[in-house]
Length: 271
Ligand SMILES: C[S@@+](CC[C@H](N)C(=O)[O-])C[C@H]1O[C@@H](n2cnc3c(N)ncnc32)[C@H](O)[C@@H]1O
Image (cartoon, rainbow, N blue to C red):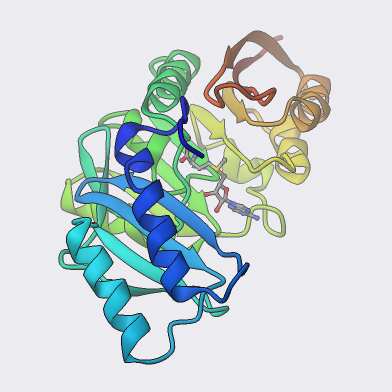
């Protein structure tokens, strides 16, 4: 890869140096996976499929991290990413709130896509004061909604712990819940307490959660999806429960690919 129109320049600048590092760490024709993320302190790197055995490899790794001024360098040798270099705690700032960033954590693919999705979520929930953010991740949408009462549910322990500590430090009214929404979706009586909900599931969608939303009295729903097929399946369940699909906004954040993200607004029909 000599040229890339998708990667940001800071990430692309690391491609050639990384090739040199991997030459030193891998056997001939070996392969590794590299994950790069732009964070507040610079670039966060996760290497998987390499084995860092012996002083030489360790020195190659730390020299690389220091020279490239990395924010963090983790190696995943099969048991999850382990930091080998992290001069300062790594954070990602979401709508002005610095959130501890776990290695390999989920973020929207681009800043522009993130901004478009936050704007859509704001438009869909309107003036709602008490909101459930379901599949909240590190809080991209939670923090994008400003100072409201928010219940945020997420299955990744590290992500929800980061969201909670960031919300507490910023003095926000956020209740963070470590919860598997496939096994334990919010029940309809739990949902009835909210003025609006946001649903932002993985590609598999949220069939179980859509079913309880359909049975609730929730007045407004924002559904963000990276898979139009599972979105269509869940939207049908939601509409059968008395919601109306007000609008759908496609967000093309996966540039030069056929993937498309979307944001949709549902409101419950009264009477
Ligand atoms: C598409 S991401 C959205 C995250 C966040 N809303 C954002 O915009 O950054 C989906 C999130 O669902 C979480 N997730 C996956 N399976 C889950 C489950 N069974 N219950 C709750 N959360 C889950 C993932 O960890 C991930 O953070």
